[in-house]
Length: 174
Image (cartoon, rainbow, N blue to C red; front, side, top):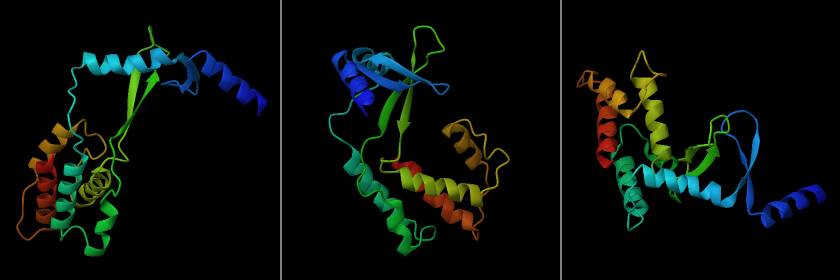
């Protein structure tokens, strides 16, 4: 216990943090200013835009409408499972790539607290169950997924119609 307290004190006095490395089972000691400046540089260099207001309330209201309108896909008594009651912005952390020169960072984003996480998880399960895809585990990005979904024929008496309607509603909200 005393060793851990000494390490914590030493880190605090030198403005340093302990992090996991990107690869391997390795920890890295890094100065605070370096750890916080690299994600800021990444965001600045990739021209991310900032928003004035927090869009989560509007986003959450739209997700509730999607869940409410998908009556054929989501049972009435299970709707509460797919609404995140306390949504927040996704959490981002940076892991240094110590195997590369100048130790660039890899940003890791946890979406579990975002408003659409539970609904997206349900949608993923439904897609895997209802829509056979030869590349189910090797879709590169959302563009390829949309191209694959567009190729599926719509049959009016099919459960795919209600699923596709919910998918379209979900995508329109984005």
